[in-house]
Length: 372
Image (cartoon, rainbow, N blue to C red; front, side, top):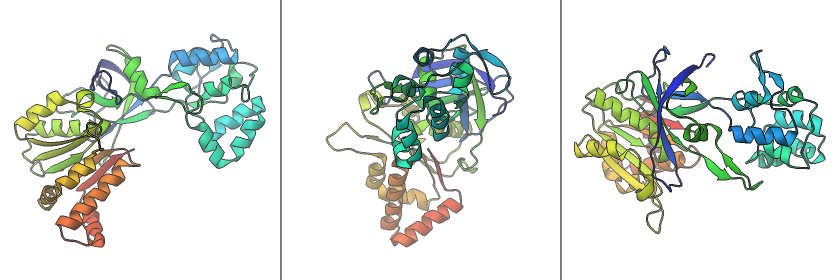
């Protein structure tokens, strides 16, 4: 991370179709000359730029000079505009940032919020530094650009599960990313995920993006290629499993693979059909897909697991390794609950015995999670 590599963008393409509420993109980066290597299951750190349009609005709202010189954390200098685009975090509000800001703003409203943990949590959700500058109750008048950037933290890298195998695509790395866009309930402003829309909207082939490899030793394919694998990855949770199926094909592994995937609508939200269909047709992959909104009642990946519970249990008893990737708050809990129920029902075990069975799988590295 200390020396991220300026990787050349090889291409950016949509994975989902136009109109998808789950807009997903695929990005390929070249690692040629980087000295970086990765293993299937690792993550890629990406250092994004802020949206220049938001930066320009912020500078205007504060009445500062975009060309004013400011110091950067590494000791170099740049214009305020360039510093805000590439170096400083203007998208997240934390207690420290608010305290520094309010030392200048002197807002009674902010002072009360900073001291109230719950109020602070509510206030920062969906708000950014531009919101502080636009709200008459929280606006601050800074002496100069240097005084303003002193309030800010550094831009932090974002980690994404790598969606490629180094043996399938030597010298490059791929990501599968969901573009985050929403309207802030707090302010009514359109907001966007800094890094996801940086990749979706503001980079193209030939551009350079700073990246680094983040090792994830707790998310690895079985060393034995004959071991069956069950992969549960709705939405962009499919990312590391694309790497898994690429790796298994590259290794000529004979173990069966079963992917549980889910997204709202089949018409707009399928991912990597062109790669999955041949794998299914050749018998290398079993595919179960939950289109959650294509019928009156919602169907998720855990429901498909439950419906196929007896076969899932047979795979587990045959030594299958079980993987899940995606949302930690809801999906991961629901999938684990479904897995425990399957073990209890088809393994004829009590709840405690099912939990012990799953604990044994974890200890043997047959149950691995990549959740966020």
